[in-house]
Image (cartoon, rainbow, N blue to C red):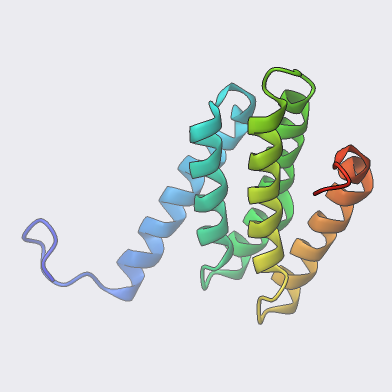
Length: 132
């Protein structure tokens, strides 16, 4: 596969692109409270993909730090009764993404995801309905 006529990309160039993309997503997460529900869903999904990257630092940051920030932003939006159903669904989507990272082969990523899941449930678990 040739990209822009530059030849076959190397492992190093992929790694560099992943780092740049992750830095960009980190900037987006700095303003996560401004994102719409649709964009939050994309952000959660993308963070999940970064949580599965070979670079352990990127994976750990996505699993333990950035997904926590997104969870916190979702909880703030759930307080609006009109938006609560949409953001409750997003929160469940986020929890499923974190749960997937809890089975990562790398102990650091797995432990970070488990800590995020427990912290999230400890703080916000009481807001779940009995049905959920």
